[in-house]
Image (cartoon, rainbow over all chains, first blue to last red):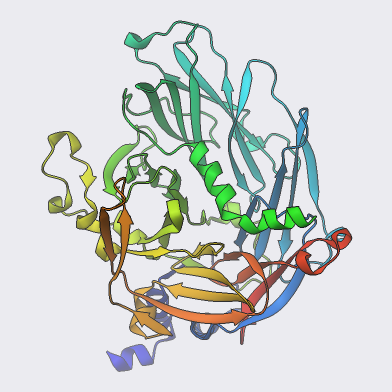
Length: 270
Length: 249
């Protein structure tokens, strides 16, 4: 067995991948051999073991504020800022920088900025949004005012993060209806509140929508569908009154405030 | 609520459970597979792990022509983090969500609660609990966590690798022994011990820089540095360093 592995670069490559818990997600470059791939993998494993951090690039951000969202994939660093602005619009700013070739100063890099208008009357934009800088995706959810108030409607908007324009794959905004049980028809005088959570992975989107009428009555549903195909499956799950559900936006906002204590120190010094 | 992979969705509930949904077949409603209970109660639990998805179409605009790094962590070998009140952090191996759950793990006491997996069935061996120091930041990437602690001289950067082979190879300091924290519930005199023992290997690097955020994948680490405290307001900007490793191409 030892000799078989020793004499086979391919076997060593497979074993190295398994050992590091990695899978190959893209094809090898034509000019890169399996032996070279093996060398890259082993060198990287050694680098992680030694953990000697060497700065290879420094860049300056275009804002005094830390990005509200950032990601790192395929050596591309995605950065996004979402400024509340005044009552009429919000400013969305983003950039994707190649960490090996980018210019260090922001004025020499391509920066995207646009203003997001407030929704029209009868529509409330939820605090929840999904941002994917490297795939140029900005997803927001509007809560529609419905009459009669038997159901709750959520409109999911798929935009380009860089421009604010609609993503062509989404076939327009998509609607999800959270249906209220027939026995729970409400008077139009009763105020209700909504919770929304949204997440995206590739062509899939998941939406959790909940309506909270009072402390002892809420209903919700969970929907997952392919947003590239434009049709959301009308298959939510479960309605349960008096049952605690997914964690809400309120707690997430609390976490955001808590995780950036040093940001506020800087703001004060400004 | 976060995707784990395209076929699996995780959701944190207000009753401090991690719900696992099967979403492979989009023509069906999401199917609840299990509800893994956490040992402490918090209404502000939150997932902390990057959204990772690779396919030829989606990655085409991202991949540089000379890019040689073509790998990602196997989904089952990743870790996810759940953070919550008072800086509690649970590092959980994603393998838990890919395994066939032994029937004996489920709560057999209540018929109404057939999906619930009590903490003691799954938690201690599949997770590691930490308490982050105030002001500390951390980030998850693949099977690793980078944890930055502010010091007088700058920052202490800890890298913890939960990959079993990194642990077996004895990289840095290997931690196999259990850790126990005490959680006090509503009664301040009543403490609940939380014991976990998912093994990991840890390496520590000291930096003289003030680091306020970190991003990482399997190939690189990016550190967000705050230089504003050293500069006049007019020049106040945030600085970012992208950091790779020795002998890297």
